[in-house]
Image (cartoon, rainbow, N blue to C red; front, side, top):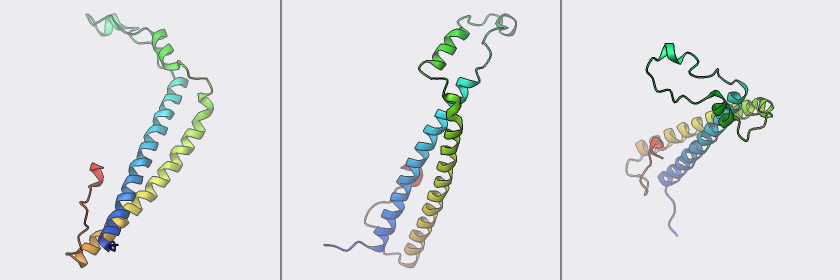
Amino acid sequence: MAETSTADRLSDHRAALNAERRRVAHWRRLVRARLDVAIAVITVPEPLGADGDTLLAGADPDVPRHVELLRSLRAGLPMAEVHQLEALRDLDGRLARYQAEVDLAFAAATDRFVEHLADEPVARPARTLVRPDRG
């Protein structure tokens, strides 16, 4: 069995950290979206088009009615949303701290990988590197 090179090990470690970065970013997006919905249920905006004739003369009168918007916003959502805010904010804070740790570890792994390649230019990894912004 062939021994894995240092460059390959460093590259694999960096790739694993990059995958974790993507996962934690996805979870944060989900938690923030959930938090946005919970806040939206609690703080409903005023009706649209109340001053439509004076603000937008000749505009399309097909503005959704306030009751339609409320129904769509609250469909299937219990009023327990209020009680979720603190838990969701806590989750987002914990995810943010973890994301910062993963980002630091990824930066350190990238530095180690670049330093290794600078010390041993012929020690390129067998696999092609993936840029973090490209997955």
